[in-house]
Length: 278
Image (spheres, rainbow, N blue to C red):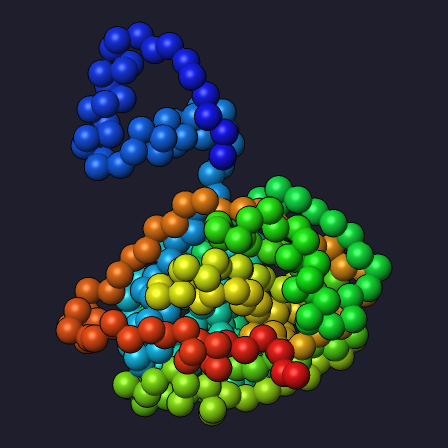
């Protein structure tokens, strides 16, 4: 983040202070938004539906429509009511990967219980002839990150020698995430072109986000996908951007409003969202 000092006419200064008070936000935020619009330079912002703590406690009911979700981002991931499959948002379209392995687009009025999206625009891009494992991919992304204290989005394109994925099955209402993860289906795809949609969240965000890396795969023909467990790829392009702002839309359902979300969700998240097997 950079700091600047400048002189403003009294009228603009007064208007700025009024806007800060009206929006109940900081001067930095209002000025950044104004400059973003004037200069045509987007600010990377995460829009999240619900929290990881709510997922851990089994709150999987619909909170936000897909159409509203896509107003806030064209790139991201999530899940569906009752954990019915994995979500990939790519190039402005929302896809559902079901536990049978089929992939389909999702209608705009469909409700979702949890998702995270952003408007993706790569700030850095690096090419690799080959990445031999998921752990090597993580090491590459670690090298491209400048901070452990902001969020990152990663878009990885390549020819995948293999991709191992898992897809959640729909579960009865109230089933905890750890129990739901034991019912997942696993798939192995070989020699397939595709994209990894990834997000990295800092450790301090564990009470409302999934800490660390979280990647979903979608093939170029939009026929295969899932939550990534392991992979190997050739001709790999790794693009990404840092994200300094986040907006969380909390559900207004009775179940969410009355739920006890004080328990630390990180152990259950690590078990359920494990990205590869040792």
